Length: 519
Image: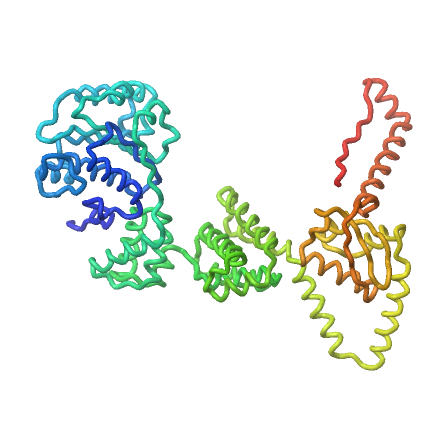
């Protein structure tokens, strides 16, 4: 078959065709123009971003015979340029280090270093995946790499520069290539579709550019697959089926259910997603990515998507960070989980378990509104009676009773942690005064709202006031002291037990209690 895959067909033939690596191209062009070409180059970066392609372009530029000296614009017409492009040049040796790792291979290579180039200006050695060479091979290369003959230039490419000895790296001009941005990939793939006369739309190309994850070669391979899957066309729905990606609207619907605490809706949406046979790893990536967008919008207000804006406006930044961490932790463990679907479900359950406090309050308010909607005169009298009971009970609040009253309130763990560190000062004019350090008084608005609602529900219309001061007898501190007393009493009881006492005497032991007091 004469068909040439897109990744090979659209390999750049000049530096101007290289995308996303302007910083590297500029260094090479300037070096050639100023005649300050280094003796050894090391190109590093992830797969499919142009390391080998740029190395070949550099070789063509150095050996192009269209001018009397190296040129940053190879002609691609002279004998030397054509030979390098077709892989037939006897003065350009391309070695795959993964298959030639031994020291004997390196010695064989170096034996030809001192031989002058046959028809070209330089003898150029390109060692691909150089990090695969053995320690002996690197040692054999060192001296030649440091002082090669004037007609020899080494080009090396690697995806793992950490495995290359520092002594080798110090002898090279290291050029780090970066992943290509999604916008650059989108424009590049769009131009290729136009040249290939492939019917396409922006959404389908965007999906391929996103799936490429910064790799040009991976993107072109996916583009080939998508064209074949779509029978010569790029249609968004076909590309989604090929990649196993999920429409953002379903992801936003899932997030909306999670942040509202609507558990049944969240799993109903997950079931809809399952019908599309998704890649669960990609699903979790999309979920994390959209939480990231929500978090960014809360700070920068830079999103134009209505669903992102709506979710960002109704949840706390703290809760957004929490579910982001839950998603990230789940993603790190998804590869070790026996069932990816179950891993996703556990991730959602964790997110739902840590519901924002305002959602719980909303649920209570809805119930209260329903009750209020059916109020009659008799109900009003009952309501008045309960209000009077609240007022009577509020007068019982003092420094000695506050600890028991606080523990009796059904607060979330977040509210207990914050307000449990504050000490009761006084109750005056239907205002309850609590004190703590400056850090302890930095309480999120949602937690403050929850506590105020619980106080009002238990004691009626009482306003909560916070003051900066030293918290001496907070509920949390009293709870810890009571725990220590219980432990000490248990220790005394154990010490007085005759059998335990005999055991300790026999082995010369003692009872040790390990405790951790929270401030």
